[in-house]
Image (cartoon, rainbow, N blue to C red; front, side):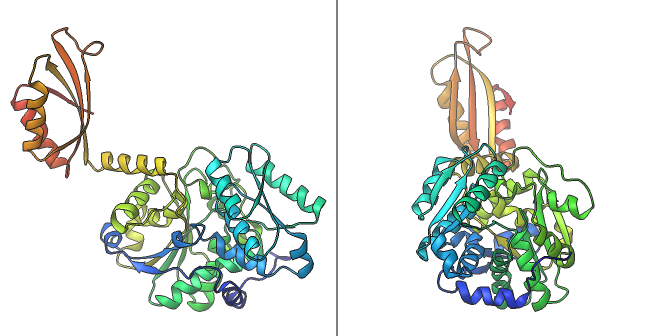
Length: 404
């Protein structure tokens, strides 16, 4: 494709020099728990440790460092409902540059507050990201601000590529890189760096099933995306023109993962690696869970690209994962309404090693008889075998038990 700027290893190395000292060189660690679960040697690049909790700082810091004196005096404007907003706000403020951040009106207040805390002047406009982007462009033209695109910008792409530069410097024996794709800035920069540092090294992108825009474009299809997703950070319809061209040249394949794999990846990172990741930050691992044969036995570098997940969503994901794994047992019992029954049931559950974590006891509305009651139990168990022992113990005592 003609007319697009070049991003290669020279630009990525220059970006690394510019952002040194203002962006954390995050650790890359081999997770034995993740490796056991996936069958691959999993090396996690922990971008969750950045000041704003995500990799977006790399591109924002580099792009802001490239501003001319006149541009610095004018200020910058960006559009984002999340990590890019905070990254631009932080690095502009560090340089004493005015940063206007346009966010859709639906943006959660916590994200607005974080962006303001990093020094950004937040403007809430529009009901969609597209409307917010249009307003940001309008402000750029009206006030002479420099628009910093979240992914379709050579300076941003080069900055994101420093992630792969660090990974391959520290773990040169990696057999593959796996990175999330939203607009494409991260994978484009990383793929450009990897192509020079390790020619032939497979680089895989990952999209979630509701938003496979890059995969559709690579297949020559029209883009059709939409619906709720836990990976809202990569829920993008319009990928960047520059990232698309780089992906065409340097990315082995774009893998599409189901929502369930993304949730499982969040839970595995939290429980196994003790890493809190947002949905978009966990999809690289989701690819190993969804396509195990492709990576079995390989040393794989995974970008855990962000950790800004709502606490309530994280809690729900962990509970849903416990249910899927059979580590939460939900029982309904019809019991006689007399003293001592609850204590008897609790004792029988405890004798089998179960831990009752929630009890609902209904006499008036759900019970089939005035002399009975309905009991609902949520029990924490080790596995499905222990769950079966608990059910058998209750049935042996003549309780009527329904699972689920």
